[in-house]
Image (cartoon, rainbow, N blue to C red; front, side, top):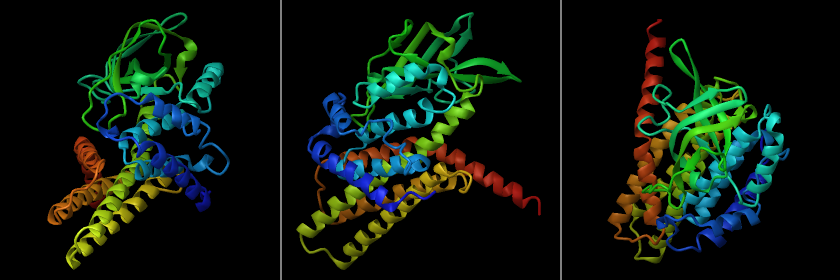
Length: 382
């Protein structure tokens, strides 16, 4: 199924219009560490937080693509990556974790969550990473012990997007060991559950004002129906699957940031002294990089939506990250060469793009090495 182009344009227009009217109008938003609840509520009032937003027949099989394009428009119109990140995670958790088939046992809880998520009164946080362990399954240590009536959770989770504003958490915990490998399960834990403590917001030096935080679980008791998905299979079924969706969807906000920066640079060049031919050529080169990044973003999202017809988006995402790095470097060089000063919030956007690229370097190296090993293995057979 191919998503109608008019549907895509409608999504982009909706989010771009909102961003220009409500996000771009807020000076210093990218430097703000306190989450703007009033802006979040405005997004809810505009129906942008409704978990059902991307589940109509035209989008049901292309929800990652729809979320990716909406995220791109949110940043290209508003010039802020932080709000787009929180918005995106809000939808991805709802679409790919909460409202999935097989969650019928907690239907009443989910229906109530859906009602409160739509206007912005609640969001749900995916709690995977741990202190000193990240999301590495070998070192994650939070546990869920079976009891006669449910499970008892103990451990700590950190660097959680939207944790400070979440009303519930999907907690990944060890529920057993098989052949020396930890088995992980997922549990839906409301914020008010006894034994769950939400720690103060963390200071993250990029993607402001998206809130990040930690939770601490001590003898936290949950009923049997708090279990989500298959017992012992959450790492493959949820953690790895969600990471793939999140990586693909995040290309949308990033391309939106690239588009915002290019528009700002073009305006400054047009309104300044007459640019030289070489400067114009370099500006065109940036436009070409943006168009290529946009194409890669589209294909990464399509690969998630139609995994049967498309190959894994690993190579696409690796090339996307490399291209973004090249784009930022060339944009920096052109700005310096032309002695231009880009208006706010361009400086924050450039900082956020550089910071996120630096953070993902190690994972990119690992993925690239895996591709190389596969190639060597194939070549060794001939």
